[in-house]
Image (cartoon, rainbow, N blue to C red):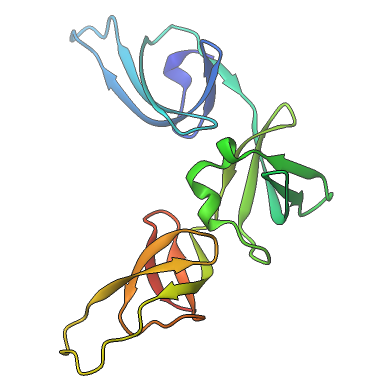
Length: 187
């Protein structure tokens, strides 16, 4: 595929690494349109490391077939997160390195997870935009405190820590935004 045909969201391979295209900037140095260059903002799959790549319009870039399969978290196996395909029940063991920071958002019984596959091999995990987690440890609310809204740290059932409003207590279920890692309401 030519660099000029590449679109946002495409998955491409460059020097042995697979990337997803997040942004494309087109620049043409002359009015005649010669030497048009494309600056791609790429993120590696897995890992999400940012990489900037500049190519001329006619340069070739290899497009990869990234398949997204709806899957549900099943269980842990020797440190791996095992997801089961929602349609054909294929099991995908995902290593902690592949899951990365999303590990704190993996819970049973929630839909919206997608295992990303290239050539039937898992390469990434897409998590729902928000998940419900249980507060396991947070300080009690201070009695007689002023009416100002204050936050306090809370440890959640998956091991992550977030800031929650002062009125949240141990054992409560809360919504967490997986993009920002922030409290987004009681569940």
